Image 1: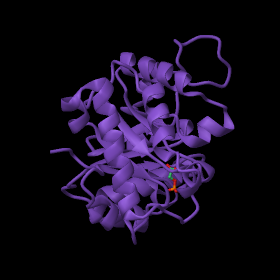
Image 2 (image 1 turned 120 degrees about the horizontal axis):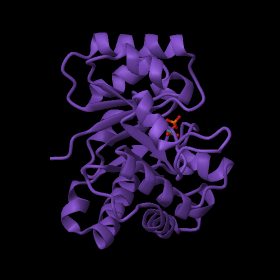
Image 3 (image 1 turned 180 degrees about the horizontal axis):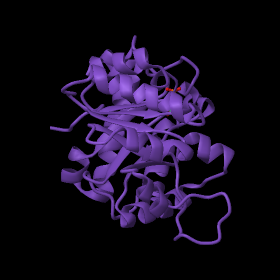
Image 4 (image 1 turned 90 degrees about the vertical axis):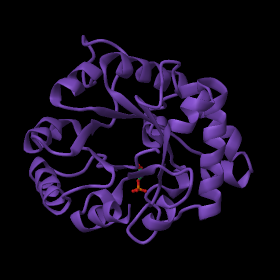
Length: 247
Ligand code: PGA
């Protein structure tokens, strides 16, 4: 049985006090969560949010890290420093990193190797653009990103895959339920080619892209969907809670 993971990707949002308030309220409402809950604040908030959550079931993650050790890299963040601040997870290869910072899959693989060596779990994102979907090459794009970004050290225990169609992120658009299930099934089948069937059956595959309180229940009920990576709807207490409750 794969445990559902509900992960909030706060992106470049929420001040320290807004973030603290959000996790405190979630914590108050969720007594015995039926899923793993993760929030990924901006770097400047990780330590403060973690300190707010002593003995909490809510886990903390970063949104990116470099593939190298600590050193002379102005403006960057390392896996070691994320871990030191309290992070257990790190999101890698989000489409906003692939696009805004021109990150290729090989770099994401190197980052994932470094994060895993440091003891962080990784959430590796993949997904097609609108043009790629219209061209009928969603599976080719996802397979190339998956094989290119997931390192050989990855296992079902230390790695989560997030399928995020780029055109669904922040747009209010989502693929149909059938389309989501079909891509997730394909990702699991492709993962089996390089990690083995056993690991691929156990690895969690999240859906991300305009998941909200109205669609979460149906998406999370699909066979090969093991949770959500949630942007906009994770920034408000009511909507994030409602998605957690949909589990
Ligand atoms: P969204 O973002 O939920 O706002 O579409 C998801 C993501 O980018 O991880």
